[in-house]
Length: 334
Image 1: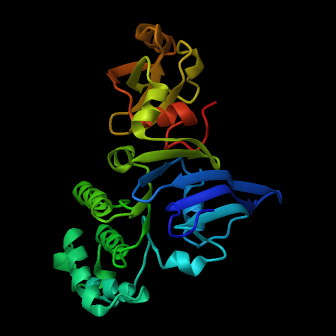
Image 2 (image 1 turned 180 degrees about the horizontal axis):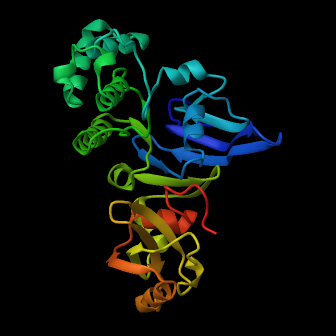
Image 3 (image 1 turned 180 degrees about the vertical axis):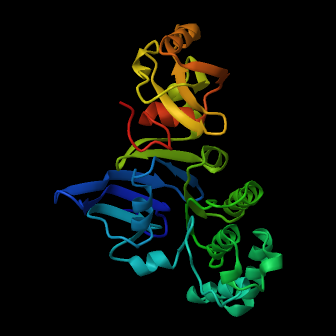
């Protein structure tokens, strides 16, 4: 492995983690030999469905969980043998987490976390005020944490991760529970923070494809503990280009709907729309296939199509093509 001074931000080799199954006495593999290299100065995205191994991966890199096998280093330091060196250099934000002491104000909490990292008060207080302004909590700066809403608390947690000016920042679903405007401002700040501070690095996990597409220099797609693809978004798009990307809003489609009969296309379910009683069906229509044949196949199965739209290749299309299902699905389609 390279020395700490020249090492990449994150480097893993054959990283593995298994758990004992709650039933049957067997083992469940959360990570099954992950090799990842993240260079300094990158914003690196990790995408995968629930249970793919994303959070386990971040917990190992942030020294919260031991790996079962393999090796992981952060800025050149081994996460097991040199965990204290790793902790001095990282920050972590997890969506929906509760941190800090409820009796402290927002400003006091940020100062307290700065003290954990040895940041002098003459730097910590102005930095706390700056971060409070960035996340839009000026009116709540002197409010106790236990009086904050869920979204406000998550913005405070986001600010907390920056008080030590970490070398590597781990963002695990950082905008979970935030409104659209707050999430957009925080994404802008992350991009600016990496751009303005040489060598600063971010590893982001998210369920929002647009977030990953906007922020990330490279994206790794992980499923069942294995990295299936890793490249820039344009390069990943080129892997699945060809044909039309189609979204249908349909009604009358029950679980017995045979997707395999739709002209051989690989289709997956998208979001349901309970207020309209419909559901989105997504697929890529290969070159030479006719959309009308798919529509006739659905009609034969008594499925009503309310709307049809076609679009360019997106990161979500890439994800579906590689993984075989959407982010919201936990089981592969039969």
